[in-house]
Image 1 (tube, helix red, strand yellow):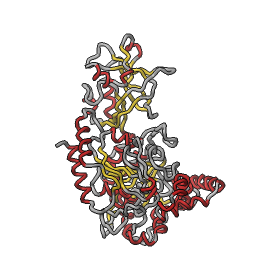
Image 2: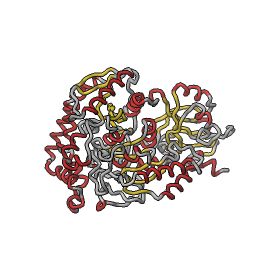
Image 3: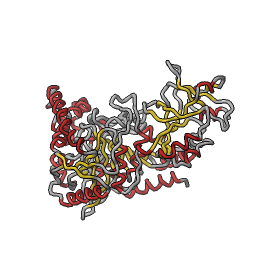
Image 4: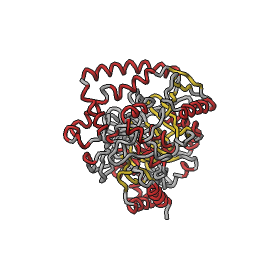
Length: 559
């Protein structure tokens, strides 16, 4: 039995152990998942997520499986995978099933679903958090190595905090939302739940990228942070709604951060709180109404009563209200910039407290609103965020803290969160990415020059349509030459993107013989990475093999 098949069998055993906790809406038949695992194991190509079982929140499309968004009457069966799902499958991950959620991703509690209220893994009396309730439970219960959620107001962070797992909310637009049922389309993010920071970051590396089908997609970048002695902003006034256990755990987390060399900076949190209030108490809620207006008009009875109340609230607002709120948000962004001038990172509780399912059922709107005071502002302010475990209350309920930073600090935040959690997580400041096109591909003769330097495969990709690939003469082992062309006439060429420590990059480049060298390649999704290029003189008289789409296919065709 292969490792991938063993991982699948373990996933289904743990899924059965969930009992009546309704974390999943749809489960792939076990034998189908095992067959996929065997296929992945037979592949000779190096796959960064080889054999890792994963689940997907049921507002994200998986081809051939109904997408319900937590509403059976809304369900449809997509013909293709969401952009991010396709990338994960191509990287060797094993899809297990679709997970439960607060209906239409509206809520932070995990109880607003006709499929049942997900329960906290550590104490079933308590809420799981939402809206990505089932995705957090699936990881916390060990069913999956990772799962996908979405995060508009905190749905990828609150359930992570409540269930003791990592929740990574990327910069808005870093992960495509093509194939995702919109909540607030201009703010939605696909997020990651994982057991550790490194695992979450590995998934982000695979699924990020510019998507031409998503108007809100953005080219991935990486902005650094001072990781050894960061200035960490903390609200001057903190609200825990009487939860002394969470308050004490946050104090301990601050002390832990200081022990790592951080300097705490107390900041005025009122502008952030006003921004978070805009999301549900301002015209942005009308974006949810816009997304579901037709269905709401046709089938109001099919929508959960609390969800319907929230969505219908959007009808109160006019275009004038929207513009005025936009002006207010711009002013609040300026006010929040004061904190970013004084600090590098913002640290807040993952949630101020937690409630039982019974408590939420009695006060579904008021208690839900409390849970978002440390999360709702993130996407309106264009922040990256990550939530990590930070201890448990005396009753065993987990507590989490969130680190937030400006757009595209995702990897640097993850590195800092890793230090806080006792992990070694490297960010791009000490790593370099390189695209390989020929003999350094996984399974090829020179791939060892990467692996012996502990390089890791990030993802497979294609270049922008601006290159030609040639089979070079008199090269041992056989190698291709990649040439950039001008004014059209180029092709997309398959590459593998690897990452290695900067300290090893020089020795790697030193082993590259002429006419090859290292330049900057543009990938299909707009990312620019270092990569193999060839001097133009060397391809004179050589066979143009661009029609094959890549070196591997050419080699297989000419065996």
